[in-house]
Amino acid sequence: MMIFAVAVLLSTAVWAVDESAENLAKKVQNPVADLISVPFQNNFNFNVGPEDDLQYVLNIQPVVPIHLSTDWNLITRTIVPVISQPGFTPDQDRVNGMGDIQFTGFLSPSNSEGLIWGVGPIVQFPTNTDDRLGNDRWGLGASAVALKMSKGSPWVYGALVNNVWSVGGSDSDPSYSNLLIQPFLNYNFTGGFYLSSAPVITAAWKADTGDRWTVPLGGGVGKIVHLGRLPLNLQLQAYYNVVTPDNGADWQLRFQIQFLFPK
Image (cartoon, rainbow, N blue to C red; front, side, top):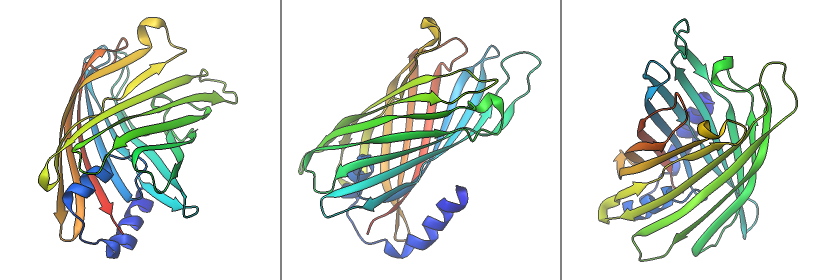
């Protein structure tokens, strides 16, 4: 997947054109925008496990739109997690490797204005390189996104929701049903600078009640900058988990660099 991301960078760099930072900022805040991008999202999760250790998750998330017709786009979003997981018992060492890849395809109208939406399937692949980094069962589910983005308004807000259910059997891993809700709220200033809050709320429905939910609260800032003619979206956010499972993180620092390829 890393090779794919680099290939996208090289093959599309010639497409980069001058576009206002304000327009690009709004596009990156739209999960179903007609924009090729490759985000590298660094998540530092603090006080994880009985030893209150650090968990690090790098999410490589290439987004590639496919034009189905003049009226419809298919926005493909892939998440490749690279994880550094601390031990959860005194005799466990830290383990590093890849987690389970998720792929989502959003069917979205190509000419939406004001209220923008997309729906489609999500697939989870058991690609983990260690039992502690994922689940050996495949996953299938549904995903939807809706947002409001009006011309002339500095506000972009909405939510992304999906639920993934395990399919098939496994000799070692339990079945799962996992919910993700990501509301997002952005306020844009001139010059491509913006304020943002996009907490990732999750629920593991098959876990015990007290270990089911993770609910963060927080936000941060973002800015469109340029590397030569290539635009980048830089983002820094911090979240405190007001609800967290046993051995879950207390808070998170998220830093993202996103390569943008406007046509």
